[in-house]
Amino acid sequence: MATTRTYDDACAIARGLDVVGERWALLVVRELLFGPRRFGDLRRALPKASTNLLTDRLRELEASGVVDRRRLAPPAGSTVYELTTWGSELAPVLDALGHWALRGVRPPTRTATLSPTSILLHLRDSVRPDRRRRWPTIRFAFDDELWTAWVDDGSLQVRSGEHGPADLVVHTDPWSLDALLRDPAAFDAATSSGRLTVHGDSDVLRRLLASAEPRT
Amino acid sequence: MATTRTYDDACAIARGLDVVGERWALLVVRELLFGPRRFGDLRRALPKASTNLLTDRLRELEASGVVDRRRLAPPAGSTVYELTTWGSELAPVLDALGHWALRGVRPPTRTATLSPTSILLHLRDSVRPDRRRRWPTIRFAFDDELWTAWVDDGSLQVRSGEHGPADLVVHTDPWSLDALLRDPAAFDAATSSGRLTVHGDSDVLRRLLASAEPRT
DNA sequence: CCGCATCCGTTTCGATACTG
DNA sequence: CAGTATCGAAACGGATGCGG
Image 1 (cartoon, chains in turn brown, blue, cyan, yellow):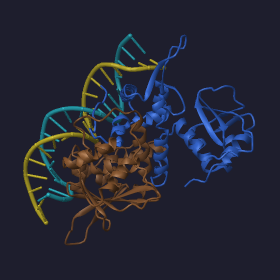
Image 2: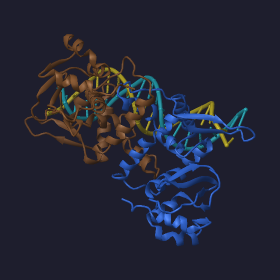
Image 3: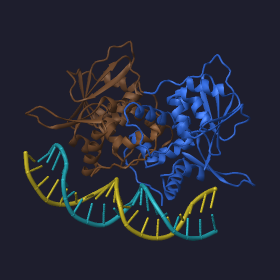
Image 4: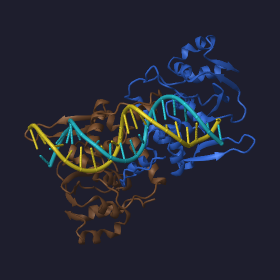
């Protein structure tokens, strides 16, 4: 059964929390920021949320107009969840929360999870790709889940899945990418140890990582 | 007993939610945005939160560095809660959430509560005081709780309590002020019915309300 | 496998009563 | 005024089952 409790407070902040304030709700939204995802994708991205909880949140977010549930055309026939227009407008809220947290929160634990979406969000917010250069399209492959990234107007754009052809393909995992964002100089060590594989011009990724602002 | 559960997710958004994602936490922060408040003030502002819950949230927010608990000097001797510097930096998060909610959320119910802080937040975000005019300091009195508002650099500033002398004093309640923000033309009806009492130049308040953007 | 539904122990919430 | 104590209800979290 889905949660329906309310703060019954007329303030816009409280009414917003009525919609996205339940536990895990904003993390589901986070996972949908870069495009549609299947139930199993969300499960892998949020392994510490139980399946019934995921189901409940998706139903509630669907009922309140934040998420759309869509069945893909046969023969694929699978169900995908994606943000509505209104739901995608939560991006500034998540951005503000993430930037606030970075300024004062304790470092993550050793057992913490890190989803592809999370690290790509962080990559997008960290890098400052040189506007004068032409940047090719990058395909990120995390354990067979694909993302597409490209530079538009001086900032990195990311979408889930294959958005057209890519000029280079990067196989890695979220934690290795996180380590490279902290220390871009470890690029060669990551490739030679197999934590990072680049098909195509690896200098593109090297330059992108090097453009990241130093971590606070 | 205070809540200590965690998402155990390395993403900054999740770590932020570990701190302010528990139920009622962000509404407690909202109530502290305009300055220090006592436990009883918070209780009146959030009447639907039980007292033990308020205690738990305040303790957690204190432990994580969002809220400071301070005992006033004798003879007052009362305890007040106020945001730390980091805690006050949650303002953009609450702003973003409130603005997002206004664009898509259902209207409040008939039984909803509306705290002085909530309506003053809305007032502050709605009005566009004319920069060319000199605006006097306004004291708002809601049921013996006082706020001070003044115009600085074209926007309304609000603080809880008495911040220096005020040029006019406005006695009202949150719902009446909300109604006037929706319909500034009802100003005279509000004064003659006693829902609004102004000591001083009432045209100041009239002009301020009239500068509000029409509601979406 | 995917997308849930059901069951069940634990934690948190919410309401009321009570104390220093 | 500023919280505790208590207790039933609800939500969470983990495991398992099940039809497609």
